[in-house]
Amino acid sequence: MAIKRGALVGCGFFSRNHLQAWRDLGDRCAIVAVCDLDPAKAEGAALEFGIPAHYASVEEMLDREALDFVDIATTAPSHRAIVEACARHGVGAIVQKPMAPTWKDATALVVAMEQAGRPLMVHENFRFQAPLLRAAECLASGMIGEPTWGRFSFRTGYDIYAGQPYLAEVERFVLLDLGIHVLDVARVLMGEADSVVCRSQSIRDGIRGEDMATVMLGHRGGATSIVDVSYASPQSPDPFPQTLLHVDGRKGSIQLERDFHLIVTTPAGTTSESVAPRASHWMSQQWCLIQDSVVTTQRHWLDCLDRGTEPATSGRDNLKTFALVEASYLAAASGRRESPATV
Image (cartoon, rainbow, N blue to C red; front, side, top):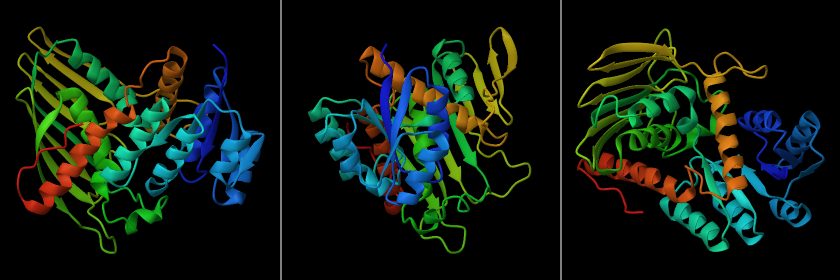
């Protein structure tokens, strides 16, 4: 397959993980340009990673560069305009989650890419974390039977605001920033949901949005799951950034515990295994779970480009997860059970 030519937009906090991952995949792709509204950030990223071109304008970059894809690592309010620019130029895009701050913008950018006939993938990296991939594999094998109940938990006291201070100003916070990840895991492992109940809380002083939420999902197959997310749960040791889970099935259970310990109980007995992520020279001990999943996410994108297939976390697929986020906010405000929008 020909080497794919890509560009990255947004040279902020998380972009280094993207650029390191693309470098790991350098036998299949080349990042030929970076773009940021701050020209100094774009120039700095280009120099550090040996990228030949840098821009402060997305339109200028798309006009000048021959690209197979654009990797969008900016904040959510900018995503729609950038994706629509990619659609106009006939360039595929992989966009960080949440793919937009609102349902209207999310559906608009998905439609724009569909009408342009270009691929769109959401960088939903939790779906590609090594421990969660292994848990999904065990569940799909049928070894615990049909799932009946699940709990998916991400609770931490980690100072998320130190690296991303803008999060303190976001009105819709933990459900859209973190909950969207964990809700995606729940719907993939348990099946689509048709009912949502939610309670949200704002615990930390000085923030605008909710930093703790508990969601109960009613799945179409009859199963129930709990998704609980929190950035306001100080603990020691802190499991950040691990997602913990417990799924009961008709023949057994699957548990993903701290430090990547997977326990599977079936009629034949109980087994356990380590499902730790792969470590690379550029990854840190605390962040390797996320960093390794970025490589896997981006590899999947390249696989889909090469094969001409739809990504697992396509824009259309991610709308189903976004619908659960929207229903959670409605349920938290109304105090009633809500139904997610049909996609």
